[in-house]
Length: 75
Image 1 (cartoon, rainbow, N blue to C red):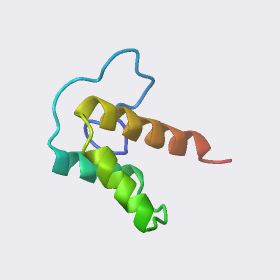
Image 2 (cartoon, rainbow, N blue to C red):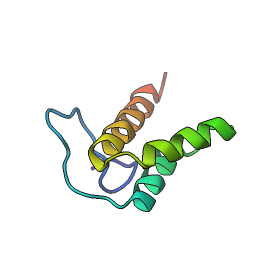
Image 3 (tube, rainbow, N blue to C red):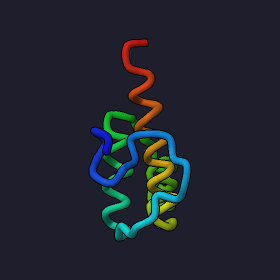
Image 4 (cartoon, helix red, strand yellow):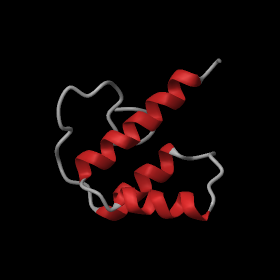
């Protein structure tokens, strides 16, 4: 698990992360991994759309964002 939030995979995914997270919680997970990033209206609309996708897709995208941010620390 990563610092981004419970349920967001911390490392590379070799398979579907599976499980079910309700859309409202997927929205929170995405908001957490995007914390500190200035978002415009379109950004927020797309983030809402992403949260509406299936759990596996939303978790994979959240994991990419979280891991990219972690990799960028100290650069």
